[in-house]
Image (cartoon, rainbow, N blue to C red; front, top):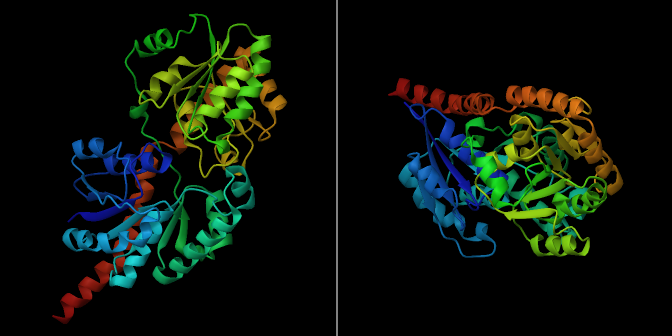
Length: 396
C-alpha cells in the first residue's frame, strides 16, 4: 500500500523550493509513494517535467494577490477527490492555505517545509522588505500555526532556530532535512561547455568566474560586480558569467556598464543547462546576503568547482573555511575581490577546495540522503493513523 502525499506550492517557477519539490517527487520510489502536486498560481515551468514523470499536477489558477484567502476553498474538492495521507506545503502562501483548510473541516496531517529566515531583522533589511508587512505576515503565520499544529521541516539548523524564535514552535514539532540534489540533473553533453563558451563569446583561455542565482538585491550581485572590477583590472583574461533573472536584472546590467565591465561580463538570463555553465567555469562565487540553505554553491561543489561564499550562518553549515571553500564578509567588496584573486593565483588551492568540496557535497547533500530523511518522516507520520486503523478494525 503506497503513501499518498498532496503537495501545495505557490508556483512552479524555477526557484529553490520548487526545484526541491521536483527533486523529491521525481526521485522517490513510485511503488511506495504517490505524489500529487498542486500549484496555486502561474508560472508552471516544472509542470510538464513532473507530468512526464507520471506525477499528477493540478493548477488552481488563483488570481488574488494573497492566494491564501481563496485557495483553501479551492483545495478542499481536490483533497476529497485524492484523499491523501499527508499534505506537504512549500512556502508561506501554501503553508497558510493548507492550515486554513482546517477551518473548513480538513483533518489530514500537514507538513510545512521552511526555507528562509524570513522574520530575522537582518533578512528583512537585506531584502528591503517593509517591516510592517513582515510583522503582519508573522502574525498570520504564528496564528495559523497554532490553529493547525502542523509538523515542520527546516532546510537548515539556521532556519530551524529562526522559526522557533519567531513562531514559537516546539522542538518536537520541527526537524531539519537538508535540501538535496540529484547529480544526474547537472550532467551535460561532452561538447556542451565548449558550445556555451562560443555562444557567450568567451576566449578559449578565459578564466571564468560564475554566479548562478536570482538577480535580486539579497543575492549580492552588486557587490560581485564591484569586486570583479578590481579583479578585471588585475587579470586581463578574467571574465564573469552571471546566470539567472530577477527584479534587479536591469539595474545590475546598468551598473555593469557604469563600471566599464560590459566587455568582460556576460548576463545569460535564466538557463536550464546549469551543468554546462558549471563545467564552463573556473571558480564559483556566491555573495548572497542571506539564505535558508544555499543550493547553488552545493551544485557547484558537486561539479568540482572551488567556491567563494558569504560568511552567513546558512553557508557555515555547508562550507568549511579553507577546506571546502572560502568565506568572506557579506557585502565586503575588497575582501571578495581578494578571495577571487587568491583563487586565480593559486591553482593548488583551487584543486584542493574543489576535491574536498565535491566529496563533502556528494556525501551530505546527495538526493539519496534526502530521500531517506523524507521517507523516515512519512513513515513516522503514518504510524498514528495506522494504529487508529488497527484499533478500529479490532472494534469491528
